[in-house]
Length: 452
Image (cartoon, rainbow, N blue to C red):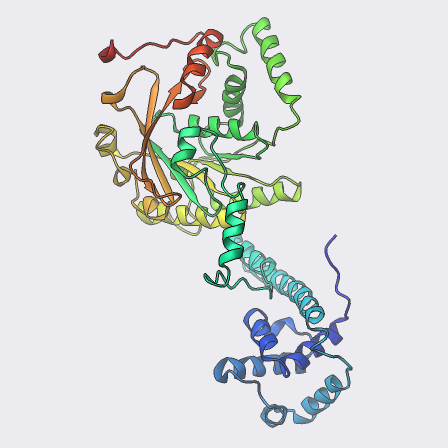
């Protein structure tokens, strides 16, 4: 249940003004987040505005006599001062109590004000994105301001937190990849995997989400390309090690599939895996916000969020005329979304024509399709392909890191092995498992012709 305020409106408003005229620290906090329209009483509104402006300009609190002389209704202001001075309230002893009551009042008034503004937008038939922005800004109002990190003062606390917190990053559960990115993907990051058309980009996201859900995470796949059923079919195949093209055909295969998935479902350590399909080219980050909020209301924390894929999204409040700006805008909005939901965003994009024809050694993030704005925004970027010089098996998929704010290891290369029957992807450290699983899936493990 949300915390309820203990003081009525008329009392909390008077105490806010009383405290602002006595304590500069309180005034600095309140002035930074309150708006004058949050106050119900005319005198409270006027005094808040004048006190805030005076403090911001001169860094001192105004004298009451000066405020009285400045007012066009000095008698009312003088009477108001008499009322607040008659309230027996020890600010020093009850500072935290007042601060908490003020914060609750701020949140209530901000939301009321946002709702009234939103009604006006609806009457004017404004873009619904503006409505969401107003309400979300109101919901974020808080006097407990995060002043960032004071490097020296927080040294012990910060390092203790880092040393003891192994859950900050979300691992891919591909051991070699996690080694390259210092254990996983941190919150507040946008991470992008690039490849040619049919280069296993979407398949990697599905495989990674499958590994995450088996380890208590709640991955959410927002798809603009494949249908929900198509993604679920891949997950069925990956989890059961069955041929994706045959597992639904015969009664015996269906029985085997149901048995396999039912057995996995009995595991109490599973997370939630949510797949949501959005219309291609018509969905924006605003649509994602609405859906993800609904999940949160139902007790499901998205962790992490996969987007398949950036180039199929619609930018908010833009026409798709400038691809550079559109893709850059979308990538910036996705990265901001990662901050809102405190989880990494992992997405994919395509290589351009130059990247399609370049060798794996030559291709770089400059070969991203449509916009260089994406690599400018992304925190990490990986390219999938096949390096002919190091290819041992035909079903290998190589990757290299071309941008990395997650751990600094740029240029590192790794490989994965693909079972083309089940579409399951294996880490380089799982070579023997990949070979053994061929007995279940019936896929081949052919050696590349140049190595024979």
